[in-house]
Length: 76
Image (cartoon, rainbow, N blue to C red; front, top):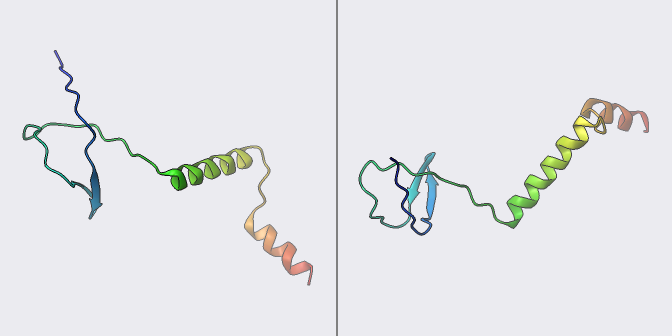
């Protein structure tokens, strides 16, 4: 049987590609934890824009960069 322990959120930073806790914890040595990335408003807005761009691409609404450059060059 798996038991679930509830505790407050722990804050960590990424250093050299590893998560490093900013505070001590009383979790037992070797305990496995699940990590969720929390985005701030700026990150959430960026992700929404990327999703919208992917939707535009799927709908065929995007123009290839080389086509745009060729069009710009032909207007001079």
